[in-house]
Length: 216
Image (cartoon, rainbow, N blue to C red):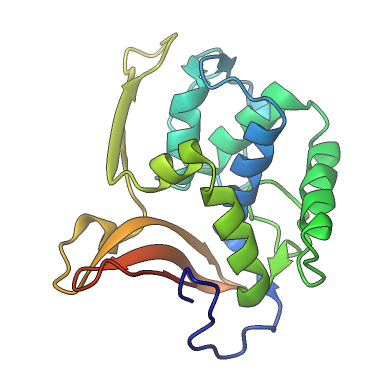
């Protein structure tokens, strides 16, 4: 897809598949649209926040800035930080998911339906054509675009209880850390579920003429 609204090539682009962690981009957009304060913070509660696929190194009672949670969720594609952020805006996750679906319906996306905020649920589905709209609109937000464009991020917990406050996040898209001869990756998001396979959405800029393309 070229950013002048021309679809250059596509295969099976209207076939619904599990969105996996591509879901988190829609979650981030919805969080910021509904007033998430990135300067605020959240305290981790396993009962409220631990995701099914939990790999976030955090202990009950530790506190983290919302901005840092957003980086962890989008850059390292960690699930638990996104659930913590959603709790900061709406305690009822099902209500938050409804907001996500109301937005995609308003965008006219008839083949997109989210069932959770992390993409762990295979019932969160979209198509390549629909997700193009999601990704474009979400990354029009300067903060979302900036975070997805980071190759690496590190931070300290606001409140540390286990003596290990420092976190190091590397982008889950290994291509983002590499130099490419013909193009530059401006931002990207990965996803994976057994039911979905590997997912990747990215914005690249061709070096020869600075033209930009979205690839999904």
